[in-house]
Image (tube, rainbow, N blue to C red; front, side, top):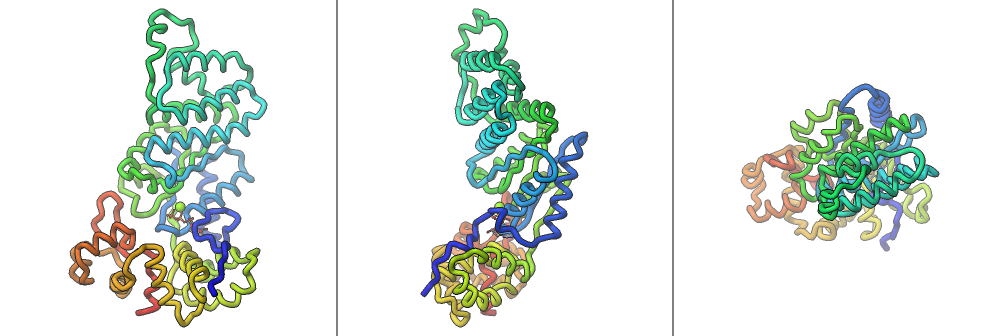
Length: 402
Ligand SMILES: Nc1ncnc2c1ncn2[C@@H]1O[C@H](COP(=O)(O)OP(=O)(O)OP(=O)(O)O)[C@@H](O)[C@H]1O
Ligand SMILES: [Mg+2]
């Protein structure tokens, strides 16, 4: 009988599940702390990169949550997976920043009013001058600290002074809330808040490579970096790092393979309070012992284990066949074809190979090659201009069959 369990959570980035990775944890925390405290420096940016599923997201969240106990700063974390394009990312930053600022400015009437408009602006397509004028008047009538939205409205819409006849005529003309507008609004808010509160505002963009419109990643980086004062952390998969990208970030941290012990620590932590712990302890350990030497990727390790728990008898004897089922189940592809290409890459130590080499040597059809690249079984060296491909870590389990 399969053991239905919710404890393995291959996709979770809950910092409470974090274990181990002492070296990277301390290094990233030190680098980030240094950047946050280097207030006089311009262009404070940190790049975190590594293979898919290596643990960038959970490490980033863990480090930020711990660092917040040491130094005071405002941090907004957004996730590229939920955004269509660059503009969406900026809207997401506005919305999350508004929610952080609500706690920061509790009880401050004027700021709270500005914050609710920051939130509102993040959701609308256009605003009219007349709306901006009435909003500005409403905010101005309140007391207390400002967050920079009012001053931005005054500057961009020329509102705040006496209304002229010409303005009266154009007041219903809409202004598009596009990337440029949002970026400038964010600049104004971040600048005001960080000087008013004497706190740095950190924007962490996790999975920047995961936005739908990949061609907008570079544009987004260029856009957001026009604001020199803001402190930006971006976490991306290695294949999304271009030369231009590396040049934009002075500091970078790479997240590499985990050791066998570290993988077991990750699993143990997930089983700590698991209702099925006793059963899993008995049946899972022999399986985990077989899987841990063949991968350093925690996502693949946990994904296999989760699949095996809920779909197999957890028997070491049938492990390979059970995992072949995982291909059908998760990728809907012919396990035999995937087996052939996987073993081909694994016998060569999984290097990056050019299309021709793969077609020639692995003896697969052009059609199959397209399917393998489209489904992420073959991972490009460069997301925008792929020249070579290597095998996704999810298929390293074919090492059991070499
Ligand atoms: N040090 C760790 N402690 C506990 N769990 C970990 C650790 N590192 C990674 N994991 C787990 O491995 C899985 C993948 O981690 P994560 O999502 O952080 O990877 P990622 O590098 O951000 O991947 P992607 O490139 O797909 O965004 C998650 O379930 C996460 O909880
Ligand atoms: Mg991630």
